[in-house]
Image 1 (tube, rainbow, N blue to C red):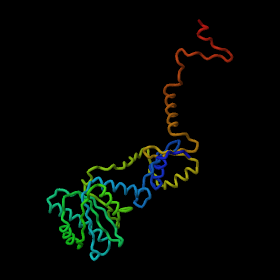
Image 2: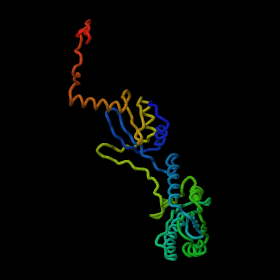
Image 3: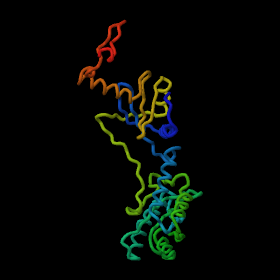
Image 4: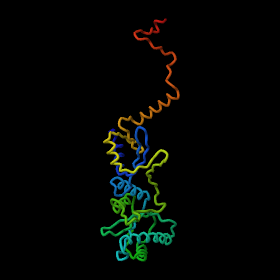
Length: 285
């Protein structure tokens, strides 16, 4: 098995959740790019997505957090009340902008599931003062739930604390409804988005196989591997040399075919027959 550096081993470990891969086939082996599953329940993808959510929340530099609750006497199920929350917030955003004469309302909303399985909606806001009593009266009218909290956020660290507290391991999901969403211009500092690989149908194929099982089978068969900086896994068939040496061999073969064998340098000594010595330059003088 090829020896991988610490960083490479970490990257190698992170792709074991993959069920789909991009594959480039070569005579010496394969280049494989495992595609993460992106499930919140995944041991790798879940924390990665959670950290990305926290970065997005902080990037909006919110100064308030609003919590909206539901009335369990209204609606037939938590799923229905979750949909009611979403609809109420859409209406409330329009009323807020109309009431306070704002052109935009910058927010990021995410869902929490209480111990009783009911939805709460937590919303990070970047806006001026909104009276709590006015919000309460609006939500009593919209969904029969006047219990509303709105608090001032002092700094970005406090915003991260709220997200970490309410999201927990992952934002709650009811049915197939969204776990979180945000307004178009919420992020003041655009967070780095993970670049998605470009699929080239001329050189790549899509393969479906559990990468953990694929790696185990290949190692047991004597394949070796290495990880590139961009996350591709280079797999070599048993006995094959490294990709760089194969590439050098290909370049040398191409040069030989183009230029022919290397010619001796001008002035170089001619070959000497076995058992005889070439005269030194001083002897010739």
